[in-house]
Amino acid sequence: MRFLLTGRTGQVGSALLQALAPLGEIVAPDRKQLDFLDLKDIRKKAQDSRPDVIVNAAAYTSVDRAESEHDAAFAVNASAPQALAEEAKKLGALLVHFSTDYVFDGEKATPYVETDAPNPLGIYGASKLAGERAIAASGCRHFIFRTSWVYAASGRNFVLAILAAAQARPELRVVIDQRGAPTSSVALANAAAAIVADPAAMRKPGGVYHMSAAGETTWYDFARAILAQKGLRTPVVPVPSAEYAAPAPRPKNSLLDNARLRATFGISLKHWREELPAVLAAIN
Image (tube, rainbow, N blue to C red):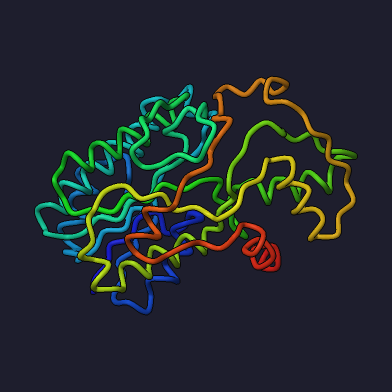
């Protein structure tokens, strides 16, 4: 099997590079080798690679900066996936794409299912939703995996930010009124790779699937769990979202219902508390 993997240096992309390695040949250009703002470059890379599976882990993920960089967010999160999808259609390739809980407004009381109506609150979520819709409209075979609160041992994420802040500040103030399921990039990559590696799974219906860790927490309780496992005693103070003047609003409820993923592929991600220790142990 031949793969074209984008976003190889990101949290999910770097995990996928390892998870997909046993399955076949991987063409994984970095940012210097593939300009995600250049649609011609994207199309040429797909044509030259002639993959069986295109795995798109590249994304514009700066939620707040997206509010002032609309064009860049939509270029990377919508136009680029559209180009990959159209090339996948021509090649007869499968497109695996990763999306986000931010396509929802967070007003629902229970976890979101795939058929719930999206209503993004900000530019980031709107651009990711536009990417989902462009992929579906292309007619290519595709799996879109929506996930939430992704973290890893490297890159830019909540876990590393909390650890750095705990070393530099006398106390931390962390939001308590947003719920979600922190999802390890390694767990996410391994689940996606397991699906691609299974011929029976590859024949399953395409479309959107929710793929996030089991369990739920708040940013406040997640921060406390991180510090506790690292043996750090920095006090954590719970605060409401309204206390932060962030440019982009966040959904209060980021929980995703993974029942369709489990029923279709027999795959369930572990509870977030089970995945956290391995990630913390891998942090330099």
